Amino acid sequence: MGLFKMSGDLFGWKNRKTGSVHQYKAADIVSASWIMTGFDAYQLRILLGPHKNDLMVRFDGFHEKNFADLSRHFDAHFKVKLQRGQQAYRGWHWGDVKMEGNNLQLTVDGCAAFDIHAQEIAQVTTPSKNDLAIELIQDDTRDQQEDQLLEVRFYQPFAGDDDAEGPLQQLKQKLVKKSGVAETKMDSVALLNDVPLLVPRGRYEIDIGRRALKFHGKSYDYTIQYSSINRMFLVPRPNSPHVNFILSLENAMRQGQTSYPFVVMQFDSESVHSVDVNLEPAELQQRGLEKLIEGTSKNAQSSVEVCPA
Image (cartoon, rainbow, N blue to C red):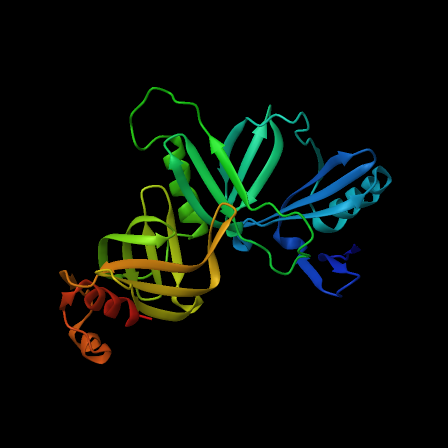
């Protein structure tokens, strides 16, 4: 609960319980909608411009009697017309999906069902050719007793086309680009192929960058920022030729409702491998690395993973 306020060039909301203030400039408004959400219950929905990352801000708790005053204020001071909009309410779980700026929107019969901002996305995966899974960032500041949406899945019926770049793959690429979940804005330092993971289970290609590790699997991709790694362990397995390289994470990786506070990689302690390191000679010397690192799997691969951090 809080207090909504407007002035000649600003609008915002103040939380009565915490005192936190959310304030926005009227000049940033692209459009404003008046949406009915229940019996005499309305939501003020305001879309901000591209320079504000196409942010959609919502204010609930209004009544029909508030519309006239709000509409006059928007016209007179913000030079924006407050439009009445419709919300999809039939409960249908199919519709049209499209990207509007940085917002993923689902509409049913032309009415807005829901939208997801790209900055709310934690991960985008395609578990199968017809499925697209979007995991959302968990808000740790909210009351843990409150329900929170953490995952949305889209399904597209098989259309008889074996083309790998179908609509879902195209949508995935757009979401990845907009959200930056698989982007670390860095060059790859080294690439490890076909690394077996015990947690989460599977075989992954590990792309070692300057600021993050990328895990590319058959169904799931993960990105781990080095800043979220708090400890690393190299643990021999008793009575086994394998050794485990373990990453302890400050922010656990998530796959659906399952969280992974640890990532456990398994290497053969005796097999010999080589890893090419994509760094300039000066930086190789600074980090104590060689252009080509050769040795047992655990030594060659774990040394490369540790140094870029």
